[in-house]
Image (tube, rainbow, N blue to C red):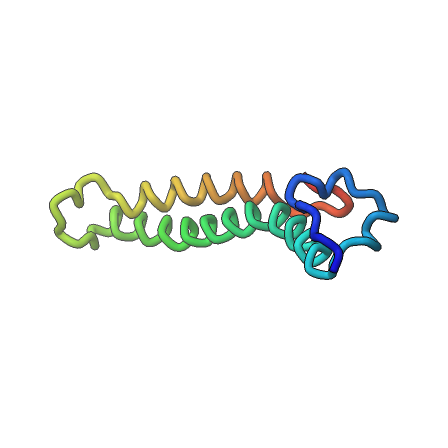
Length: 105
């Protein structure tokens, strides 16, 4: 059995003729490495943006419509501010880590 090279960090230095000497598991690790590097930031950004888009209008409705639950800190309107923060953060991550054709970040 051919010993498996250390794939993490070596992916950028592998030449096409060296790929024939890799075990199938190593090729799978290389493919998953590139997919995870590209899409994890986009996934986190999209999910955070989704949460922000849900919380922001609900927080605005609760704040401006006087529908907030009477908690100790309700006067700070945390749902609105967390919704705004998550929307901005998620929008930044979604744009920053969007998949682009032919470019690996």
